[in-house]
Image (cartoon, rainbow, N blue to C red; front, side, top):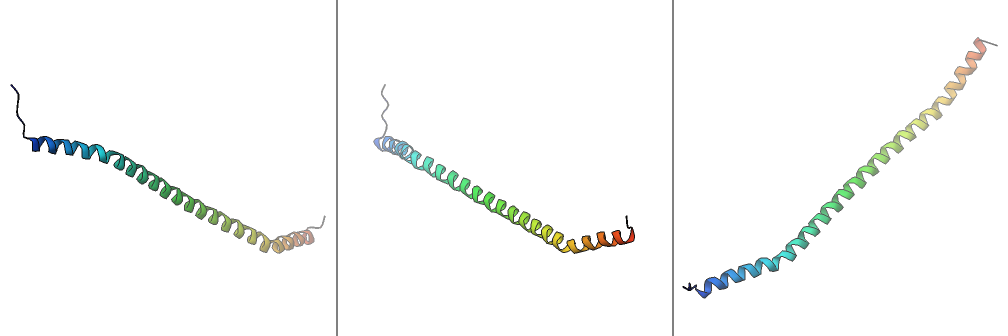
Length: 88
């Protein structure tokens, strides 16, 4: 026995299936764009963090250099005083 189905129901189901199939590429491409944007964001976060770390290292190296420059006279004075006190 053949079952009679209302044509409006079959049309609705067909249109739903077509809609889902038609939206799949757009959703997939949207996911690709979202993933690319997220990856780019992480890349920029890492770049900023690395630049910050390099700035900290540069400041530390500059501080060490300045401290060595300022302490040169003190070291020279200490050596000359030690030589005066302990002539060899």
